[in-house]
Length: 65
Figure 1: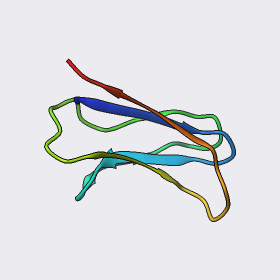
Figure 2 (figure 1 turned 90 degrees about the vertical axis):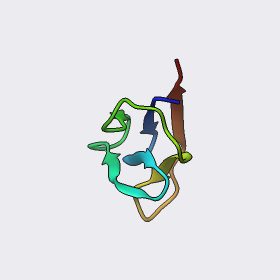
Figure 3 (figure 1 turned 30 degrees about the horizontal axis):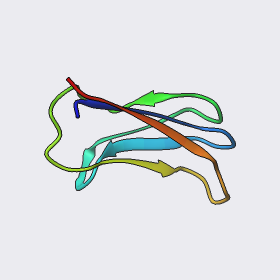
């Protein structure tokens, strides 16, 4: 995989690469999407996380060559 895109229905989400906090970005709010900050081959699993204290339906897409 090369990049991750995610969004949340009720709140913002954060996308990134497991074990690399510097490769993590968060969306601005509900319905807003966010791309992982780099376009490169992942050697760790991509992640998408709820960025709020209550429930959130999250969606994600991963891009591969």
